[in-house]
Structures are given as C-alpha cells and as structure tokens.
Image 1 (cartoon, rainbow, N blue to C red):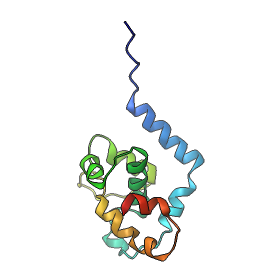
Image 2 (image 1 turned 120 degrees about the horizontal axis):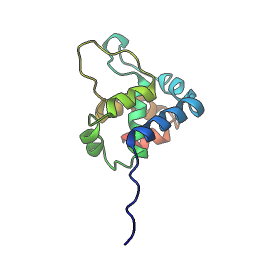
Image 3 (image 1 turned 45 degrees about the horizontal axis):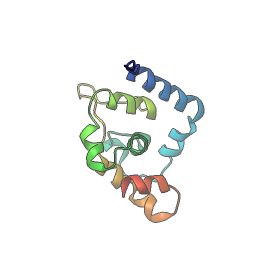
Image 4 (image 1 turned 120 degrees about the vertical axis):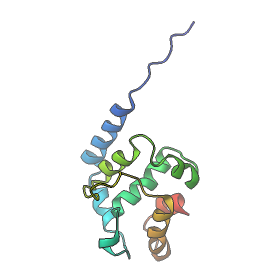
Amino acid sequence: MRPSERQHDGNVIVGRLIALVRQRFGFLNGLFNALPDRRVPEDCLYSSATLMWLAVLGFLCRQGSRNAMDANRNGGQMPANLMALSGQRRWPSGRPLTAPCTQTVANITIPIRRSSARAPLIWSCCA
C-alpha cells in the first residue's frame, strides 16, 4: 500500500506566493495601477491592481471561466489574499471584505483591449 501524499498547508503556499510577488514582481502593482482607468476614484472600491490580480489569479489557478472565478471569489481567504497581493489597504469600515466580480475586471479592461496590445493576458482572461 502506498503512503498517502502529504497535504500542503494552503496558508503557507499563499504566504510564499505573496512574498514572491513582493520580492520579485513588486513592480506589477505599479504597472497595474498605471493602466488607463476612467472610473471616478472616490466611487471605487477596488484599486486597478486588485482588479488585475483577480484576472491573473483566475488564469494561474486555471479557473476556466468567469463564472467559475465568480463562484469562488469570496470563498475562504480569497478577498484577504487578493488585497495582500495588490497592496490595497483602504477598505470601508464596517463593510465585509469582498473580491470584485469579473464583470468589473472586464469593464476596466475595455479601454486597454481597444487601445493596443499592451495586455494580452488581460484579453485572454476577461474577454
């Protein structure tokens, strides 16, 4: 009989991913936040980086569709981990922490997709 595989602690993996992103890919949040954004800043709940990280995580985690991403977006520690990756620190007091829906991500990427080939990953995740 084969011994069972060792179960990985999801919190350790998430912590390592966040550390890797901060150490090696810290510039991504700056690039994501510099994307064209027609939203009124005072009305925005999520930063551009938070929206883009949702698309990237959906791609990396092989969610397969926007429906699958939306079904899982507020489960477990997803909202907190998404905020940690994006560096978003502001959140309305008294409001439960949530992750954005993929329609919000798709809406913010429309000007990017129309303007040039700046973000092919975003095209594939949000089309």
